[in-house]
Amino acid sequence: MPAYPMSGPRSFGQALAQARDTFPTRSVRRRDEVNPDGLYERALRLQREGSLQAAAATYSEVILADPEFAEAYYGRASICYALGDCDQAINDCTRAIELRRSFMEAHLIRGAACWGKAAQCEENDPSLAGYCEQAISDCTRVIDAETGTSASRVNRGCAYLNRGLAYWALGNKPMAKHDLENAVALIHNSEWRSEAEQWLVELKKPRLLARYEGETWHSICKR
Image (tube, rainbow, N blue to C red; front, side, top):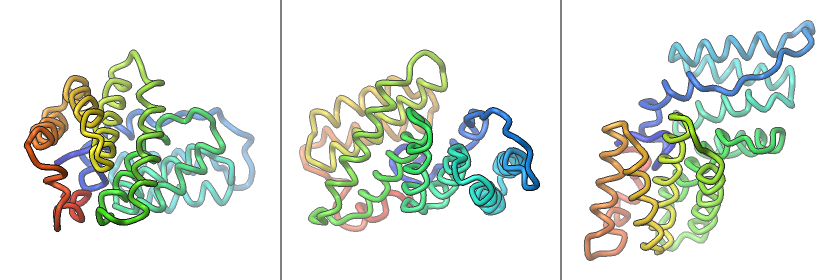
């Protein structure tokens, strides 16, 4: 079941193509002995080519050369999320947001990564609510900010899906239903839309958190 970034890192790669085509741009900086901008362009190229480990290492080089390069933190976060490392994705997105206000792409990834962490929690895990609340907060920022373009439509659809699942995990079925319906309306990609539709159908069944019970709850991010 694919996602960008939707219900966890389990299938981020299917939407990575879109992400790498819409990476944030950055003005050219002064060229020092180590050129962060040149390294960043190399990292982008490696990510577009699918060399994720090499791209992540190059983003790390950018950060070493320029610890305030927000886009490099975001780039590394997107790869960490794609590879299932939600903790590092959250940390990198948080730093990117600290460095660049209103960094919606970073909010999108962080929200998805927080939902990825929530999806690995037991239902009585004390950290579950915190992850869900952060996912809801980040997704709301994206939903409220993104308008107009086809890319923003996809981002909002993905944010609605992640937020809806987070609401559902917290037991707020009315908001979950509202968000999943919006996700279905906004997402045109057939696989992503199919996922949202499946969750919506499941939500309407007369049992609470049916797909979060047992092993399914722990494996939701890996399917």
